[in-house]
Amino acid sequence: MKNINRYKQAFYKHNKLNYGLTYIAVIGSGIAEVMLAVLLKELMDLAGSGSMAGMRRCLLMTLALVAAYCIALLLKRTVLYNFVRRGVAAYRNVAFQDITDKSIGSLGKNNSSDYISALTNDVTTIEAKYLLAEFDIVFSLLTAGLSLALMLYYSWIMTLTVIGLCILPVAVSVIFGSRIAEQEKEISDCNAGFMSMVKDLLSGFSVVKSFQAQEEAGALYRKRNEGLEQVKCRRRKTAEMIQIISGMAGASVQIGVFLLGAYLAVRGQVTAGVVVAFVQMMNYILGPINKLPVLLADRKAAVRLMEKLAELSVEDCEKKTERMTGVGEGIRFQGVSFSYEEGKDVLKDVDLEFEAGKSYAVVGASGSGKSTLLNLLQGHFDGYEGRITMDGKELRDVDTDSIFDVVSVIQQNVFIFDDTIRRNICLFREFPEDAVESAAFRAGLKTLIGEKGWDYGCGEGGGHLSGGEKQRISIARSLLKESQVLLVDEATSALDTETAESVTNAILDVKGLTRLVVTHRLEERELNRFDGIIVMRGGRVAEQGTFDKLMGQKGYFYSLYQVSRAC
Image (tube, helix red, strand yellow):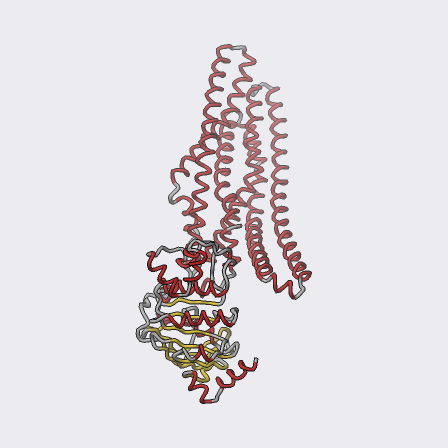
């Protein structure tokens, strides 16, 4: 697991000045507040002595103290929120980097909602209960410590009474702290599950609606919503219990000090000013008594959320040192078998060879292993039997990230974000203008760009584009990236016949790429353009060859083709 100190350090690494100034402001305001109690003592004692010189001195002290207090508060207001702003941004940046540094296979072992929760809800909790709480704890401890020191100076008997009565709140913090931390983790997990469910329901809304399952979907939503609120309610009840017990202890301290102070004042052992000072300083004792158990428990809970992030960002796949640089010697599968679950082979003894620069169609019934071939070529899994080599290098030994220096993937669902056509093609990166134009026009986007312009907004999820236009953007990306291998996984399955043929032709028109196209479309005009057709059946290679050769054999492919013609 990544050490959570990495995440803690993110708050402070480039934020030391704001952090230091915040501490100065917090300490200054804490000292100023405690000095108010000293000032009240002096004023009360002077009222009994009738010394005007002393009154003038106290007035000057008051003005100086108020000025210092205001300066400290203004400094705190400025630097504290600057510190939090920079710290939270840095923490979120480090978290996102660690998550996106994971390999695709490792990343997919957790739900996307877990990552979303860690970067949103959890960060909000950490900001309040770790960063801001740190200064609340320091302020509370400082004012409590200074108050106790002054109390001890004024009356050790009254001070020992206060200390004795404060034992219960400390015990409360120890007992309830772990429970709060676990409940905070439970809330985070429930939030992630709830977000995942909401995302699924909204993304599948049209299906739910057409199936007339709105009531059942609503029931599921209400059940999960109620479960989340119950977990949050338990957390609030635990925190409230800490507050109640701490409050009762605080009231006991206050009453006890009042009674003892009155008794000692009557006997002449303390002045009236000392009693007033104790009353004022009791606020700086009672405040931490009520707040510190919750603050410490919350901070412990926030650390638990950082530990959760550390668990999520673990790269549980071995890091490889060898890098993929090309595909000159082609791609080979030699005796490859693979299963997602033990005992259920998806691929069985697959032997295939793909020559560099040629195009291949991979066809077969659903579940025959077509997409798994592409997943293995992307390095998603290395638990296969046999050998898979690209340019003579075994994929098990190659750094996964370097595979994508060579390989691009086009899938049925193209990633399009709410920005311009140009920025969607470049996908967050910068490229020379002529390179972008060349890639776009080679991918068949010339008409779209001519009509809409480079700065046309694609809409959320590409809502302003047709399916074919989105697929052409994905083709342009691979051309711009200068990939040597293009893997296409059912990219045309959701398109109409004319658009699907147009997209397929755009892929096949690109020269110099090694293309593996998984398709369910068995159209003679398209299939004749491929250099080879791989026919999968039950995880095995049933047949392979050109369209004419396979049709002439009148085997499994011939049957698939005839069935597709009849549909």
